[in-house]
Image 1 (cartoon, helix red, strand yellow):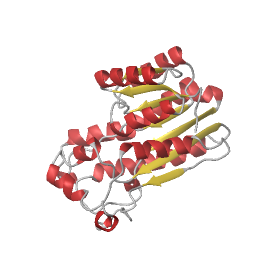
Image 2 (tube, helix red, strand yellow):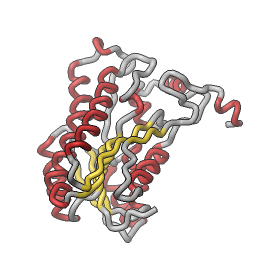
Image 3 (tube, rainbow, N blue to C red):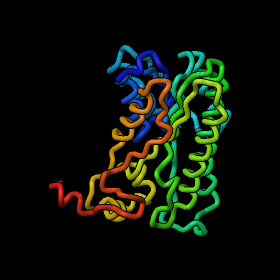
Image 4 (cartoon, helix red, strand yellow):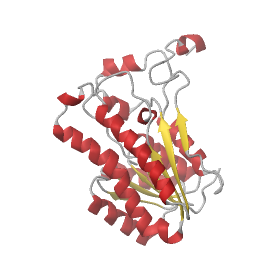
Length: 267
């Protein structure tokens, strides 16, 4: 699989799914614009990818995706340095406050999640469309949503986060229709349970709660989601994988987990 010569902007690129996606895209031959708030991690990753894959060019920009001025400045300067953007991966996301119920959340927590998870992908997409994709009428936008955007999970504490993911689904579908008449594809990638920093953050770094949730089965790793993104991007222009759910096989639905998976399969 190859994305040679294409340029991809990845948000939330400093860790987790974003970092794994950046690595997978570099391996596939794509040039990279890496965006997050963490400059030290971005600088380290960018240097590593440029060294490991000398055939590509990777650059980074620090920006809070919930701040349009920062986002637009990052996109503008990136396009000036590296050229047009062919691929946008809206990956940056945030879930905080669990297991508190909605009415127990601080208003600041609600605003922070809404800013990152709703304003973020909208702001980045707005800037990338206007500064690159619309002028060429081509490109692919992948919004990393969640299986929870379509179905409510069986635990409390994430009403805002899951509402955000539902909003991302609506934005994805509406944007796809609005861009009719161009060669811009708009896709949704929906991960299930992914082990790592993001889920630990969701449960407040409560190790016991983290272990209990993952008990009995093998969760996804960030690289599994990254490979799914590359698969979607590698489809011919006339094919859109409009939405792709990638979940652990033991995650039968949001309410049913096969917690005998490891026992049955010798893991």
